[in-house]
Image (cartoon, rainbow, N blue to C red):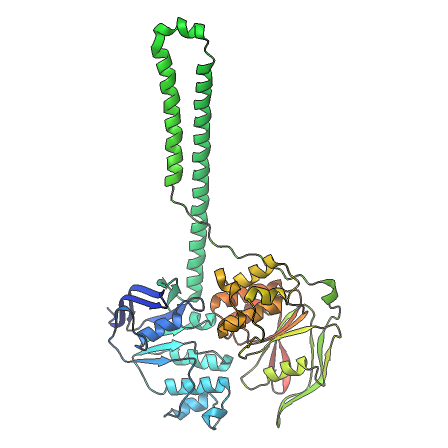
Length: 487
């Protein structure tokens, strides 16, 4: 039997009187490979910090029986010893840390992290900012890792490759599922179907009992009416036959009792709620925004530079109308620069005169005006309020979230709001630079639904393989100074 490396018992953790985690028991064993999933704010990173001893629970104990290392997505790398073979593998430039890009900083942190062996690894969102090559390096480093792995990630491809157990954090509780992310999805879908089946059975039985009770009550009413129609003469004549009246009264009461019993059974039925269904969302474009060019964005011998570095040289391309076009390429290949050049209608780019472009960039969003989430959306969209609410709900703005002041939103909430506004806004071309980077899996799935329902043209950069497979109509790769269509 594998030894326990880390154990959580009777954990309760609250923040401002709100229960964040309630865990009777969880254990990490010697060769466990655990993926932690859940919505933003559910407590995934908090759970990892609790396991690392950075947070102390209100009640309960966290016991560690092994040497664990912790990888935090939010911290910057520091000057420390590093295996230079790993630096080479990760193509990290020989420069000061402050001069490294976001992706290069993540690569440096990974090189430092993997330079020393530990019995257990606690890793929080390691592939944010990483390109496909960086993610592949991470997978290869951990495929044959000999120890306990606990990983928070929104990258479904990564989770499928590395984990054999899923912990789902929801409502303060942690549910455990065996298998990788795809197995977890299949189990969740099975649970949903079983719940739907139980809900339908509940409704059928409830309806049967209510109908039967109504029939019994109708029968009791008929008996009552029959008794009333007996004339006084008949009553006198039958006075010596009291047992007959008693028989009718008894019959009436027994039928009423049976009806009451059925009504009580309805009340005692264990209610089974219907599983939550994703609302069908469509983004219909008004005629005034419809484009008719077959290729609303084209490159004609486009040469693109960043400083002295050439990124594209006389590149030609045609982005088709109404498609979701994904641009991939290694960190530093120039994807973001290309998007900015298109937004600025730069030289070598031909854009339809009717194109109205909305863009999402990787940056900290600041809102100038004090207003609620719902008002912010209503002022920037022609859709009705019910559609706006449905889209916000899909992006996890639930309950009173739509009443929040936009200036008080967290970074993740701001990103989700900006994405909602783009799809509901007055645009016919969307340019999205790494839109999934700070979204949880559930919001990424919602974004996939948005893209499938969107009638406009979308250009996006992403390194998320599962996301690309699900949304892309065509994929271009930036390499060797060209933009090549991937077949």
